[in-house]
Amino acid sequence: MITWMQRHRKYLVVTIWISTIAFIGAGFVGWGQYSYGDKAGAVAKVGDRTITAEELQKSYSNLFNQYNQVFQGKMDEKMAQQLGLQRQALRQLVNQALVLNLADSYGMVVSDKELSDVIQSQPMFFNEGSFDKAVYEKALSDNRMTKKEYEESLRKELLIQKTLYMLASNSRTYETKTLTSALGVSDKISYKLLTPEMVNLTENEAGLKAFWEKRKKEFKTEPVYEIAYVRQASLSLAPDEKQISEYYEANRLTFKDAAGKIIPLADARSMIIAALNDKATEKEALRLYIDYKKGQLNPAVTPEKTAVTASASAFDAKLTKEIMALTEQKPYLKPRKAGNDYVIAKLEKFIPARTKTYEEAKTQANILYTAELKKEKLQELAKNSYRSFSGMTTDFITRADSSALPGLTQQEASEFLSKLFTSKQKQGFITLESGNVIIYNVLEQKLLQTKTIADETAVAKLKGDVLDQGLIKVLENKYPVEIYVEGI
Image (cartoon, rainbow, N blue to C red; front, side, top):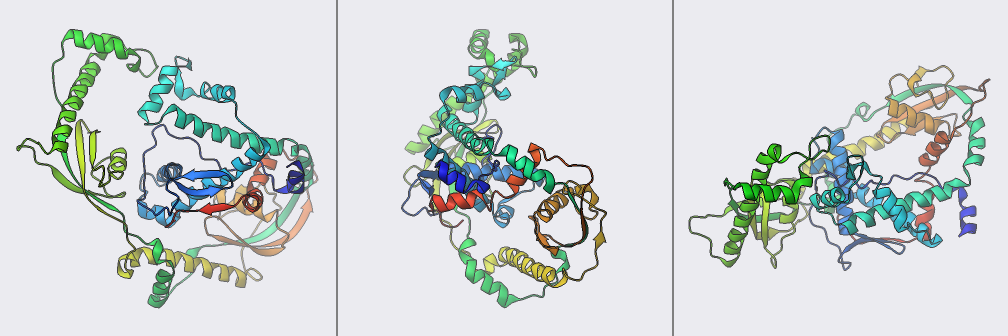
C-alpha cells in the first residue's frame, strides 16, 4: 500500500466533506419508498463497506435540514428533488466509504479510548462543566438513538479524519514550499460574469416531452399512507404531595435551569404535575390502543381518517416517519405524542409510488429542462464570446484578492480566483458551482516583489479544491462501487 500511496501521492488530499453527526435537534425528512432490488437492507456497496438504507436516510435528512436553514425554512420536497439532494446524500456516503476502505487496507482503527476521549470532550454532554454520563444517555434517548448507533457513527467519522491526516502528515512541508512561488504570482485580468438569466429560450413542447421521455422514471408520485387514528386527550389530574415528591427524587437530574443547575422541588412543582399528567395520559392511551387493536373501541369513539405523504402530513416529522413505516402485516402504531395528546394510528391502505404521466410531471420537468437547457446555452455563449468581450479590468491581483472583483459575490470571487490561478489558459471561461460562468482574459502577469509565504491553510484549501478530481477518482478505480437503489 505504501508503494501505491507514493505512486498516487498527488491525489491523496487532506480534506473531504464529512457529514457531522448532527443528531441533536435534527428533524426527520423522508422522500418515500424506493426499490432496493435483492439487497434488502443495503442501498450500495463500496469495496467491502455496505451503505444501509438507514444511513442514506440520515444523510438525506441532515442535508435537507442544512438547506432548509439556508432557505430560511422554505425548503420542501420539490426543491430537494430539483437540487438532487438524494444523489448528494448517496454521493457523500460513497465518498466516506471509499476512504474507510482505504483505512481498512492500512489496518487503521479508532481505539475505545480515542472514542471515549472524544465523547467526553463534547460540551453537549456536559453538566456543570464536565462530562455527565446521565446527560449523555438522556440526549441519545431523547433523539431515539442508541449508544451503539451513535458510537459506531462517531467511530467512522474519526477513522476518516485519522486516515486523511495520515495521508497529509508527511507531505505538507514540500507542498508549502512548492506553493510559495505559485501564490506569489499576480495577474491583471479582464472578466465578465455570465448568468442563466442572460439566456433567452423559446417554448419547445417537443423538446420538453423528449426530455421527460428520457428521464420519466425520475418523476414519481409520493407513496400515500391512508390511515385511521384515535386520540387520547391530555388528562388533568391532581397528584398528591407524595406522588410529586417521589417523582422529583426519581427524576431530579432532568429538572435544570438554563445554567445547568438543578431546580428545587418548589420551583419544579408545575413541571412535575405536567409530567405526571402526561404519564397518566400515556397509560390511558395504551388501554385505548389495546381496545382499538382488538376491535373493541367504545362506540362513542370514532376514528379520524387522513392521508399521509412525506411532504403532506397532519403530524410532526417523527410521527410521520413512524406512520410511513407501517405495513399491512403490522398496521397498528402504539400511542405516540402529538402536541399534548396521544395518537394511535392504523394503516388502512398503502398506495405505492408510481411514475407520473407527462401532464402530471410537466411543471416539474419543465423546471429541470429549462435549467439544463440554459446551462447548455450558457456554455455556448461563453465559448463564443471569451475571445472578444468587453468586461471589467482589475489591477494586479493574487488568488487572495477576492474582494477586488466587483460584480461577484465573495464566494464566486474566491472560487473563480482559485480556479484561475491553477489554469494554464490565458483566455477562457470558468464554470462556477452556482452554474454561473466567468469569461476572462489575462492581460499581464508578474511576480510580487515581496515574497509570499504559503501557509498550511492555503495548502489544505488547494488540496480540497482538487479532491473530486483526485483522491475520489483514484479510490473509485481501486474499490468497486455498486448502487442498488433505484429512483435516485
